[in-house]
Length: 106
Image (cartoon, rainbow, N blue to C red; front, side):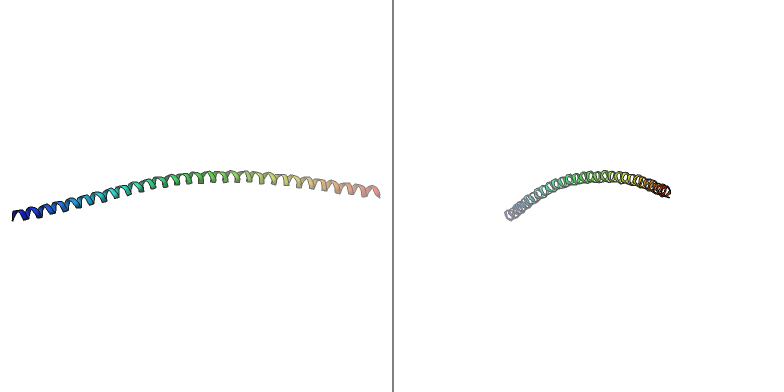
């Protein structure tokens, strides 16, 4: 009968409306999840940027330190060379003085 068909159609409409509400709720949940994930992504990108900046700063500090160490080593090397030349010169003078002393004593 017509009343039965209307009742069946009304039930289908009600069921469809309930399904639509469930789907809307699922969509809201998914959208909220997407927003949360986007927030986390933004935080992670910020952290990555900070870490990258810190890495560059540390790298710069180490490079600066290496350059200073290189200059110190070069300076010490030059001082050692100069001291070796001084020692060699003094050694030569000492030998000459001993030679002169031996010559005078004879």
